[in-house]
Length: 95
Image (cartoon, rainbow, N blue to C red; front, top):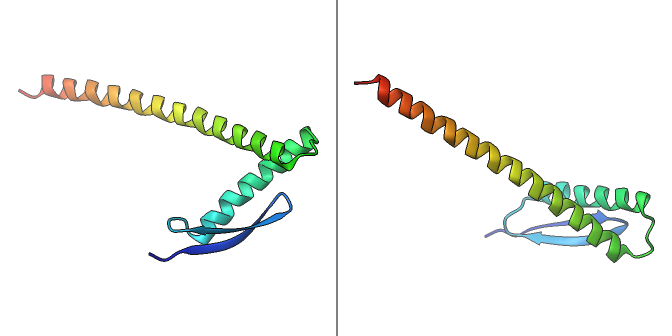
């Protein structure tokens, strides 16, 4: 399998990222999101520790992910219920 490698800059530091799964453009996109979130947190809370800013960014991003995952799962459940209801109606209508 081909390894993809790209150098990204996050919060003023360069990181060499190697991945089997992600293409270089996806790696850059993810790095840009992390960089933006760290800069946003640093503007709001000018902490001297890059590690603390990174941890807060990580917590923030994971919380956002879990909220969206919950919303997605709720929509899936709603759609499954509607599909079951429609199947029952079709079964009743077709002799």
